[in-house]
Amino acid sequence: MIPFSPPHIDEKIIEEVVAALKSGWITTGPRTKAFEQKLVGYCGVPRVLCVSSASAGLELMLRWFGIGPGDEVIVPAYTYTATAEVVLHCGAKPVMVDVGENFLITTDNIRKAITPSTKVIIPVDIAGLPCDYDDINRLVNEPSMRQQFRPANEVQRQLGRILVMSDAAHSLGGWYKGRRTGALTDITVFSFHAVKNLTTAEGGAICLNLPEPFDAEALYRELCTFSLHGQSKDALAKTKPGNWRYDVTYAGYKCNMTDMAAAIGLIEIDRYDSLILQRRRQIFEAYTQAFKDDDRFQIPEFETLDKTSSFHVYALRLRHADEARRDAVIQRIFDQEVSVNVHFIPLPMLTCYKKLGYDIRNYPVTYDNYSREISLPVYYDLTDEQVELVIEAVKKATEK
Ligand SMILES: *Cc1c(COP(=O)(O)O)cnc(C)c1O
Image (tube, rainbow, N blue to C red):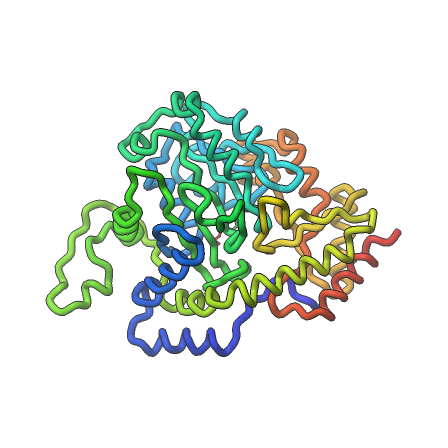
């Protein structure tokens, strides 16, 4: 069986994790701080805070912005549940909008969904392709949009407009107009979950890129405390001789990254471009070569004039299929010992969101994308021979 997305774990990673284990310091410490600095350099942003997951990072930042009951947060209907569930956790309302044919949230649909209660937009770089951030950033800065924004606390007053926080769980290393993801919006959150391009087993990172008067360094320090119980000193600082006394100034959260996770990340980030992204690109190109001139298939967009994907998900679509036929094709692919997937089941089709009143009929493009989509395996250790097997299996499964 060709698996869908196993992690790439080699001796270098194992050695670094063992070194962390033997160092006497396994939770947040020097390796986490070093990994944060690597991400600062990689993304070209002022500051990065590593956390235990992207979900935790998204929720932490919504809470930092003071999101609560009565607030609206715009999210695409086509995403993973984490994007919207964090809004529910805060007691706010996820306002779902339809996406475009390329799976990404559209600026027009965002515009139609904005109300005076809109506080945050969470665009999602589905499959690794960055959203249209110039348009989205321009939209929230339009004078009429700024005028109708109703700040409810000091942080919201300082920003003076809707916050743009991208869910970049898929798009580490993607490009938009010469800049990397992370540097494209006020806040960007990456995921290092086991199936993502760069993994730390579980983990996430928050890129801080807010405009003035926000100070990235001060905000970083504030968020270190916020993500660690609201405690004035972290565990490492407390180990300094005589430095035992601490205070807790408010009820914070607990979502820091461990040094064992950061050990994996430290090895991965150094070879992410040269090894991981390059191999993923080769696989994307091989699939595209195989499917592009075949009328049965619609290939995904992964490079445009303005954008380069991080090659996270190869979202192939069947041209002449409905959901039932797509499902049957998937079964026939599995029957040939090849694992595929669907990214994603739209949120309005999941019980949690149906119960809240969301209805997939209001998101026709989302449904159409989903109903014809099949995600093909893409990962560093997938060999050229296996790529050929996947292509053959897909072609055979779609024969009449
Ligand atoms: C994986 C994923 C997340 C959640 O990441 P975690 O690190 O597992 O919390 C959020 N959004 C999208 C689009 C994802 O695919």
